[in-house]
Length: 191
Image (cartoon, rainbow, N blue to C red):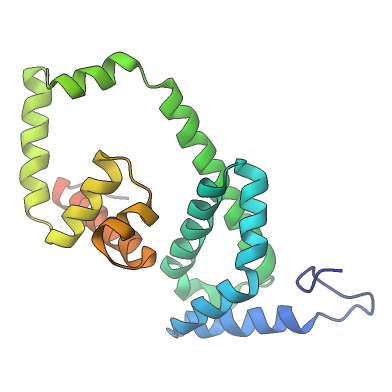
């Protein structure tokens, strides 16, 4: 039986479940170091699940990274999670489904649209939109602007953005998230 499989035959929760609950509580109280301990306890298992769902080692790594970014974003709500392992598995499954959907959307993108962007031919409306976006991007912190450019315009994963900018993956993902949040605010988009 896996160390993190759930209840033992005696009906008691294994020590690992208690440990994860404690780590979730620590993370909820702002102890960011708990994130590393959660990764140490569950990272391999979550990677295996993501690999099974995506079929790609690089996408599985991106899924696990996304899970931990989401976990960090949701840290205030974690103290009340009843089953941390089930919560992590569900997050991993959902992130893997998101990757699958993005992959499918990319395949469905018309080649003509990509060719249009490469040649620089744009309608006046698209040019105006691009100019507006460029001005909004200039209002971001340079590190956020660079992360967003690499992630969304160059198609880099968070890990690739991290390598290109020389920061940890978590930092690269946070810069993208915070930059997009700022862009939404500048655009007046509410979530």
